Image (tube, rainbow, N blue to C red):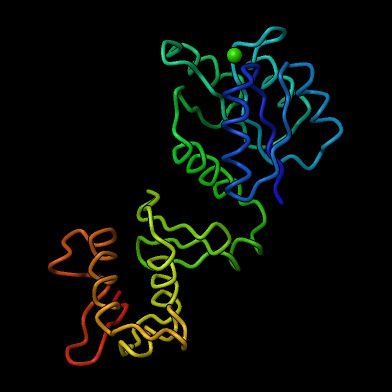
Length: 229
Ligand code: CA
């Protein structure tokens, strides 16, 4: 599991971040002061990314960032800045941070930035290829069970996720509604074939630019569906 340092002095923001990182499959390492963060980095040299709050009771986040870079570390660094601190972005650039997330942020926004930075840093090339499936603008992560289109996270139900996985693993293959029902709902499922159509219709609304003229998830008339990209 990838370790991420979370430096934030406000306990409620810190636990919000920690919970969401854990949910996304990361191992958060918490620190509430700058000095504590530097100590945690010393004892956890395998931390791959740091989230640094700027306003702290001791040394500020920029100073922590400067000291991390001074050691020659290439780890990913994302600054957590307050809205009114636009000027902080400039300072951050000069101290070697990779990205910024402005407070208040949503869990989706934070994990998207973390994922994007980890991707950019090329951490664990092998692990990534075995947990990610890509097709056109779509990127399916089988570890987090998430789907992105053009880098934007799409909210899927578990059934929609399983449908996407089935299609992306079988590009260009026409699949009957019976096959889809068995693969996604299981052989014991006694539901109607219409269940497939209903869920495909919902999925298209999320993934297609125009669900009435599907570009990716196409209909094979009288048979079933195909990942047509
Ligand atoms: Ca703070």
